[in-house]
Length: 457
Image 1 (cartoon, rainbow, N blue to C red):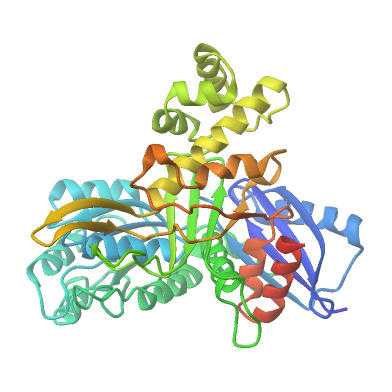
Image 2 (cartoon, rainbow, N blue to C red; image 1 turned 30 degrees about the horizontal axis):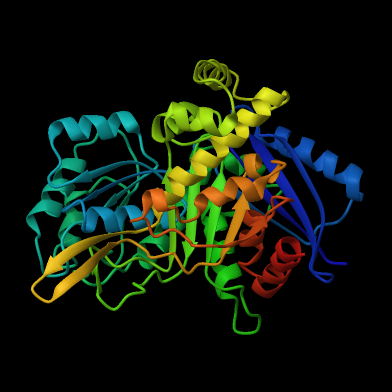
């Protein structure tokens, strides 16, 4: 046996997954409350004690970790045009595992700088202009950011013609430079920025959030937890040169505060008379719905889906739904331990999934041309995706995850949404996906085979 320990420092729980590399199996899991505000080792040690009781005191050959504790990786981005460089910057940040707390477009104002100072981001991603295009906006914004009172790393990933000048304007700040996220209007180049964001996370953010206090117990914190999830989803879909993946998929991670959606698919139009509008979409895409979550963002579900929809699905009167939602928003650790709450939780989960997937998937609209009817597609066409991978406590512990996840599928009531037509539901029962994303950094085939065993049975 060659045991490896994989640690996920979550905002609420520190989750452990022990795997045997030789047997390519999960040998144990455990969890303990994350204690980042005091000493993160306390929560980790509690989880380790639980794991030792279950599987014995193993000598782990390696210990890897990811983290979303202390707010995760909080980023602010700035670009030129909302639908172009600003969107490219947001895609790059989300793909790196960040929580994007604000997106700025056009020239920054004094009020914007005051807001950025109040937000205190972990990283600011500065973009703007295609290579050889507009330089005025990104240069202005670099000059404005130089006046920020708070200190945070700035990643410059804009027009290469003036990137060096941006770095010079930001003298005295911690500045990093990489390739433009949008070198031309038809090309999205977000991988260099994602790699650099992750490097900055490891170098600086881990220390700033106190996570390096666990350094004696881990080989290294490798990435933000959402980045590990994205890595796992991508590996599961694409496979490796020596091990086939399972093909295109949609991932749903339903949490207490946010709902993260992942799609591993090109998302090209199915019909010949359809044209793409806007930026090209990355194969591996992540979106975060910060207003849709099962407890901290419970009101956002009701606001997005409608009180009547939640009432109808739960079988509870609208007034009772409103009362229970208020209670749950104030008692975020409350479990669905009564028939009423179980019915409500199921309805809320279904609506959260429906709202989040609809926002993630592309849409199509009919347009009339001199040649006849045509279609304009914005975002990804996911109608042919045939597998949905589900994770997050509300789905893992639900008695009816398949019924809940039917709400991720195409519906005639929202006929312009390009959600999957039909899909096989794969549930991450043991909460191992983030751990497999970590493991894949050095043992991709092993991670892939473990995921297949866990998800496909």
